[in-house]
Length: 170
Image 1 (cartoon, rainbow, N blue to C red):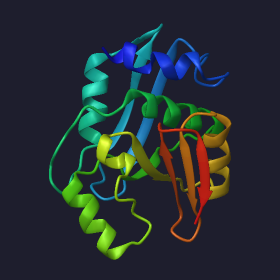
Image 2: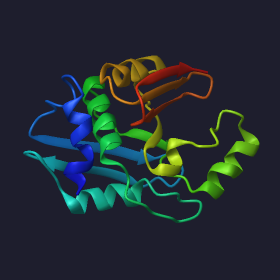
Image 3: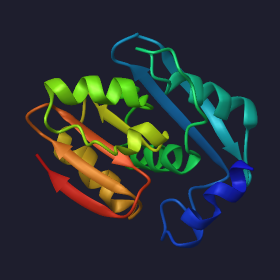
């Protein structure tokens, strides 16, 4: 099932995602919980179901302790972005999946939280890096030519989602 969900992304994506290689890895650290993930999630054309389950748990809404199957298309965009950045340390996850309740709560304190956020669908992540700037991360993500990339320079993070291709800066 995972492969068929991602198939449209690869067929329409030049270079970085479609030809991302025989092995794909993801290396993240949750900024709030200090949990870490460093795993191979794709080998020779197939997603590893246990790895996708682990990623989905890692990307959960930790405030509500709710897990959904996280969209593998966004995992691919994040992994490709990491590859382009050529960093050894994990990127820091600020927010992955959010329940509607968490999203609403965050919108009260932050006007930048979208009401129909891709976070609610398990299709977005907010990330930062100790060794790369917001501009460098967003450039790498934009080079993937897949999904949305939002640069939040004042807050020090980049939003990456697997929705329509678009960019914005705040």
